[in-house]
Every structure is written in C-alpha cells, then in structure tokens.
Length: 125
Image (cartoon, rainbow, N blue to C red; front, side, top):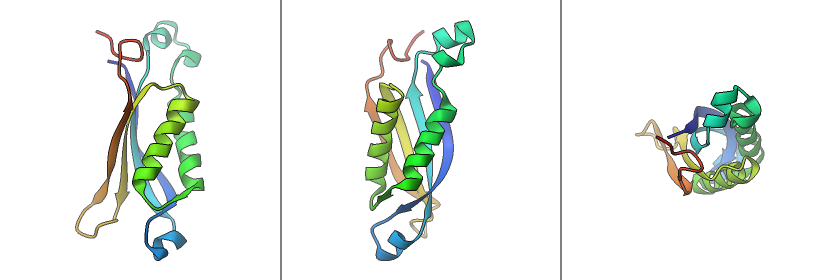
C-alpha cells in the first residue's frame, strides 16, 4: 500500500463555539494520510510524479489559518475536500486534534476517512 503522510502539522486557527474562542487563535494538529501511486515517482526519481507533501502541507496551513469555524468537524471536512480536489487525491484519512480543548484530556478531535482506497490509487503488493 502506498500512503503519503503528514504527521502532526501544527496550525493556529480561529475555531470554537464559545464567544471567547471566536476572538483568539488556537492550535490545531493535523495528521493526514493520502493514497498515492508512488511507483512511477520511485522508478524515475521524479518529484513531478510524486504527491508533494510540502505543497499539501502549505495548502492546509494556508486554508486553516485563514478560515473561522465553530466545529473541528467542519474544518476536517473542508480540508479533506480541498486536498482531494487540489491534489487529485482519491482517498485520505485526516486526524484533526484540538489540544487543550478539554482540561482533563491532552487533546480531543475527529478522524475522518474520505474516498476509496483501490489498487489504482495506492494499494499494491
């Protein structure tokens, strides 16, 4: 299986349901897994055939830091749609964490999986 991943991408964003949260920026942590057919890039050593995780990371950071949402669920869904459309990713999994949101927990968040994982988009033996 070929999965390109970005782990613990930190972004400051305006997110939350409470009035005080709408006036501050809070840290969000993204972990993203994306199916990608890596064989062509690996065989040719050509970045143009690879999924450029630096560009994906920058797109996620730009999006998350420039938007305001009440729910992390909304942020996760919109980031998933952005990645799938902008980078032609047909399957992804996003874990979006909001550290410190619940005093008794290190972090809370959501994990979503969108698209279909197939041999054509990343699974191979």
